[in-house]
Structures are given as structure tokens and as C-alpha cells.
Length: 319
Ligand code: 13P
Ligand code: SF4
Image 1 (cartoon, rainbow, N blue to C red):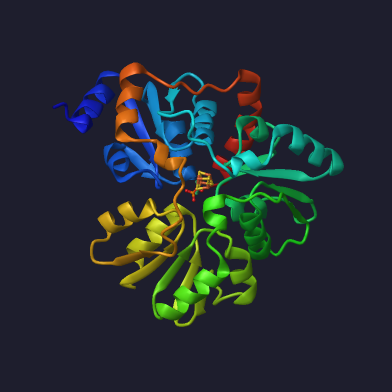
Image 2: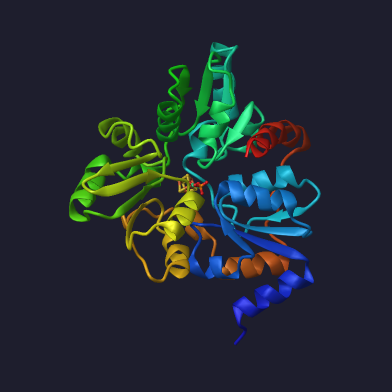
């Protein structure tokens, strides 16, 4: 029987392809990837690769971002149905209407948006650089932040801005991680580290409820250290933490890499239900088919890509 992993590696060499995978991908898919990381790391890899073909194991907006950054490369998404419920919460038309109501505002769009929406933004951001992107904007300028309201309120709180207007969007996976669940886990896991993705539904109330922390971006609650981090920020933190037990509040795909890279530590998902069905649509079989048949190409229309690239490159320059 054909060994799928071997075949994928052979095809990858033959086609001069690179496989990029998000931290939420299935374990098998992560294991054949050349790079596994967060939205920011994946865009940086796409921007710098010498490969001719990028197989993007993630969701549609991520493949679009790679195509915008590398218009001359072939960007493949193994399943075109791999969308994002958060990106679907705002259309370019809705954003244009919002901008018309606030003509002097600066528009900051989370990378979880369609290319058409990015083309309407002044800056893009990911969860790992949203605070720095907002800090780079003059304090007296009004900001329209979209589409994630939990990430937006987290950024507004950290940067102490009261002129950020938030689009009421949310990711169904992270929004389900509610404050009551976190409080219960804090009580039951005293002394552990808690890593919370700022898209989580608990973020806003946890920030307000527990005040400003110890000045290192950390909060100590029930003897637990609580950190708000992007997925790659969580990976870095897990490695350097002296704690042996870490509770992880994000999509559970990240646990594969965490456990693999830190075999001496225990990682517990805050919610076993935090599963993104879109991320899980990318299987090893589909990655093989994608490389073998060169499907499905994601290409962004040139006029849209040219506008969206400005916002993405401004973000990459800030890091
Ligand atoms: P990051 O990996 O950038 O933290 O984003 C999380 C996410 O929801 C991707 O869809
Ligand atoms: Fe979109 Fe949420 Fe899935 Fe991330 S986890 S891809 S934000 S639906």
C-alpha cells in the first residue's frame, strides 16, 4: 500500500513545493509540513519562500493572504470548503458602509478576513501583533477594529484607548470558551499556567474582572498565572515556562505540537469542544491529492490583491 507521507514528500520535492500548516491542523498534517505556526508566522514564511508552489494547510483567508504576498506562486488549498466563521461576519460592502459613517477613522482588520475586506483596510493585524499595530497609530485617531470583538476589546484595554470602535464579530470556536468555564478550571487547577487566546469569549470579562495584572502582561488568579497569547505566543511560552501543568484555551489542534515539543509537561485543553471544523477539513489524503493534481488554486484578483497587500505589508513591517 502506498505510504501517503512518503508520497507527499516525494511530490513536494518534484514540484518544488512547501507545505505550510496552521497550529490547529490535524496531527498527521502538521507532521508533513515544512513549517507549522500562527497566522503571522505563516504569512512571513509565504512572503519569504523560494518554492514555486505553496500548499496551504489552513483556511481560505490564509491561502488568500499567501497568494496576495506571492502573486507569482501557485497557492493551493487542499479543500476549498475550509472557511472561517469569523471572516464571514463582515463583507467588503458592510465595511465600506461603516467607513462612510467614520470617514476619518483608521481601519485595522484582523487577518481573519477575506481579501476584499483587507483591500478596504489601512492595516492588517494578527493576534500576535494587534497590540503593536494599534500602538503604532496616533492616539488621537479613531480606529475601526474588525471583525473580532473579543480581540478588539483586549487590544483596547491593553493600549488604554477609548476611541476604538469594534465590529461585533466572533469566532464560534473561541466564543464558546466562556468565563464560567475558565473560573471553574482556575479553581480546580490551582498553581497552573493558563494560556488564553484573545479571541476567546472569556477574554473581555477576565481582563476587567481581574484588573491589570503584575505589569508583565500576566495576571495571578487562584495562584494561577494567566497569559493572553496568540497560538505561537502560547508555543513559545509553553517552552520557557517552569510550570509543569498548563491549561490551554484555544482550538485543541495546538496540543499536538505542545505535547510533542514539551514531553515533560502536561497540557490540558480548557474545553474539549474547541474544535474548528474548517481547520479539520484538511486531511493527509487531501494534501496528497492537492499536490498530485495541483488543486485547488487560490488566486486573488490583481486589483484587490494590490490594495490588500498594502495593509498586510504595513503589518509585516511593524513586527
Ligand atoms: P493565531 O494562530 O494567529 O493566533 O490565530 C488563531 C486563529 O483563530 C486562526 O484562525
Ligand atoms: Fe476561523 Fe475560528 Fe476556525 Fe480560526 S478557529 S479559522 S477564527 S472559525
